[in-house]
Image 1 (cartoon, rainbow, N blue to C red):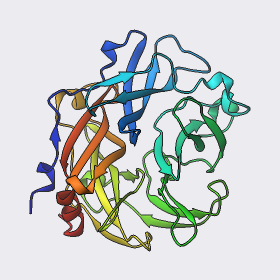
Image 2 (image 1 turned 30 degrees about the vertical axis):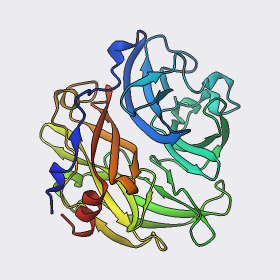
Image 3 (image 1 turned 180 degrees about the horizontal axis):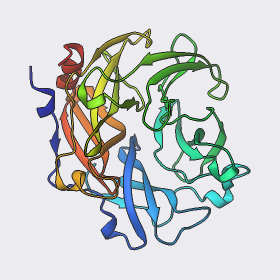
Image 4 (image 1 turned 90 degrees about the horizontal axis):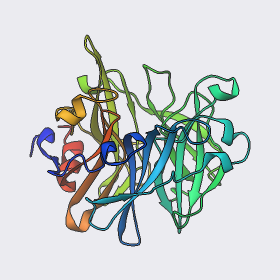
Length: 314
């Protein structure tokens, strides 16, 4: 079996989205990818120089025919000023997690509530059918919570999701269920970090990807050391019928901040995922990730090798 650290290959075109190519945009990072109408769509976090709307944290839409060359929208995907109360006054919309359920694309995004005079962030549920108009549904978590990731189908008659509650330097993965995507309950802890050095600080989930072997969940892990924090990317496998059951996880990381654009930037030493795209029939795995909170990069590899790394705890 291949060393997990050697499964993924960085694309030679990296960074595939560079803020230096877009006047007025300071950073582009933490993309959430999905396939729509045969093309790759990404919701991309950004900070802008001209501070549109409430603040300068925004989400842009990027579309690609080949999965490498992306066209970035000229304006933010969501005009936060047009949202109803209290969303129009909350923190900027970034770090989305996209999931298709039926014919609708749902995404969650963390929004700050400090702007309302409260502490930390909550997760807000949005949806779109065409990536042209957006609906805002509800705040679906209490603070402090980041990284809520929906399963793409009901399991045992219930919608399910993964959560990342926890304070700034600590965070673990929980699981919850809902009858309608709005009202959530039956919360229980699923997985904490510190099974390896690369996630000794905290971990967080992305939307589960269905495979024949189980639910594949790409995760980030954080190590705190004398030089600060380092963000890594690994993976976890959950049982298809009972996602409370962890059937595998990578002992080694899949990706570490090593390339220059990952090591140096707005926040150095960061590779951060908000999702991935897989094609089991072609054994393809495409990981779009934020690099140093500054640009967007792509790494590709064998899906089956990643699954094997999880199941064999490598």
